[in-house]
Length: 94
Image 1: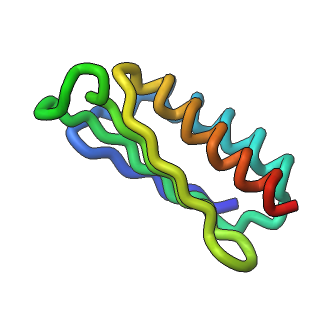
Image 2: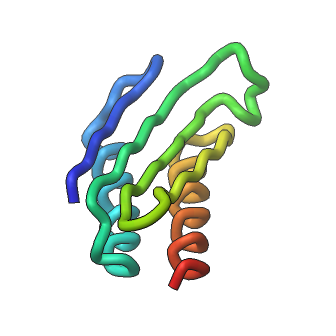
C-alpha cells in the first residue's frame, strides 16, 4: 500500500508517523486490496480547543473510496477515531 501523508500547520514527527503507520497496518489486515492511503493531519488554532487537531483519511480500494474525518483536542485521539471509522466502513463493506 502506498501512503501519502500531508500536514497543515503541524510538524510531522517520527512518533506521529509511526502511530499512523501502526493504524494503517491494522486496517490493511482487514482489507488487503487497499491501493493507497491519503492521510492529512492539521492543527487549527482558530477552532475551539476541543476541536483543535484534525485528521482525515481516504483509502483507495476497488469500488468507492473509504473516507473519514475527525477533530479532537488531541492529535492521537483524532487519528484513533478516524482509524476506527474506517475500520467500521471496511467491516460493513464485507
